[in-house]
Image (cartoon, rainbow, N blue to C red; front, side, top):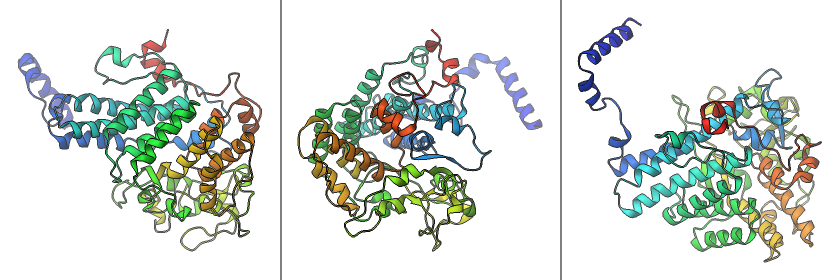
Length: 469
């Protein structure tokens, strides 16, 4: 403490003696925006920092818990505010809303800074386009989550170095999607095709197709998927569904965009969802407990008469294999008798649960096939059933018996729920399917509008003067 006081006094003395000279000194021990972006390596590090900001997010609270797939779980007194997300009573001062908002805009801020600075560096065109394209994809992904959770949000696309860039009003949902689509179009034109963990053209086209499906722009969605297929990057369904959710799953032929994790015993570089979702008996917290409603959707046996293998690859059930040679026990599941399995793994020690290297898949090729089936069915073009059957076949299911547009719609929606469970898609789907579907899935409507959006966090309203009018 004494050392800190001495330093402060010394600094004050220097400032008093020569304020002008002191202020003209170059920054020591750090970088300003002006002197950081000087080499291609620094530009790449800035974009890597955008990726890094995705780690440790709480998207599962919205994608899963707010849906009919899961409830809070955990112990009764632990994180009780998550129940307010589940029952749609969260208010603007809700801590988890604020945390998600802050973390997501941190990603956007880092992307904005990188895009602006790299565009001015004079790098080789191909290098600059690749780096800027990656940052634009990550910005688009962030706004896609925001617009589906909060609806209208401030659309910030410039560095926060001017008042006008900080105090930004709410944009319309249409304008937010327009920015998402433009960013993804730019990304597809700029990034390469390498499958090295960075965003590539396939990822950009896949997310663009998803954005178009969410807007009901079926022809545009199919055009984006056609562009994806024309890339010819060799994506396909993995033969073994469960292998996607094991270490190395991010390098699968099916993984298009995933959050990857390193493993270290000295630094938290792992996927901490492992500890959030694991049983108390393994040092976990039991959160995100699957529901009977989710289990019930697996009501179709394989052609061999077995249970759909995706069920036991996704969750722990009584008497079924767990990890490290153990058998899951119903009492481990706490709130519902089930726990999420997709983020755990065999070789993580109890005291190092947060070091899991299992990826968080954000876009898989299976989802692209289901998006294609949906767009075909809704537009009345192509063979939607054939695309759906590709996903069903990997799970060992027979061809769909649905033949009408309505029956195929129901079948595709059901398949999305089975295929993508606990990858944080379900709430977004329930809401975009319409209020009637949402009420049927979630119970009596708790909101007056066509769909529910969580409130803008109070912290943003307090800090952003453009939201106070």
